[in-house]
Image (cartoon, rainbow, N blue to C red; front, side, top):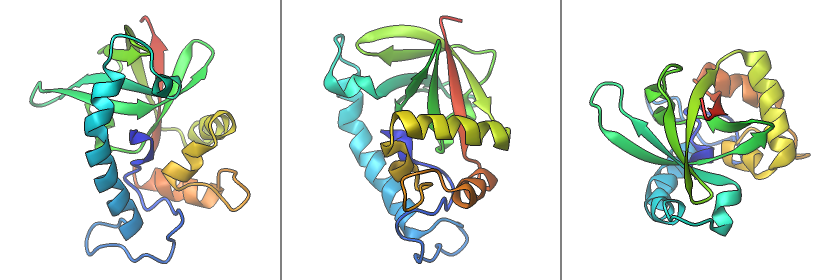
Length: 175
């Protein structure tokens, strides 16, 4: 469910919400982050089951090892399939623990699969991939707060989100 944790003001429904002092994040984004922290607890249990669930069509559970502490994190993430890779919006801090040379275990539809993460930082490629994701799963626009009134990615909001660290993670399965 971390589909919607861009660490950016990203725009969204509450454009007029002022950022908190020193955070650069509007109130709507901070409230959304709190919501997902709470919602992720039961999501970990459901997504960790050894059989497919209805949620598994768009959500997966990533087992990520902390880069400094070695602590294991189980992070629910939304995904969109693009051929042999999975695409995930990378707006939360969890992406800071990813390394291109360190495979991650994903619980995908009740099965563990190995995947090599590739953090996409090129703004043009992020824009292309985000548009593809939004086409296949329109809810990604709402959760990421980067959609326009017509349900398409808003280039200005996306550019702002990228300035604040928004990325796309491309998961290469069975590295």
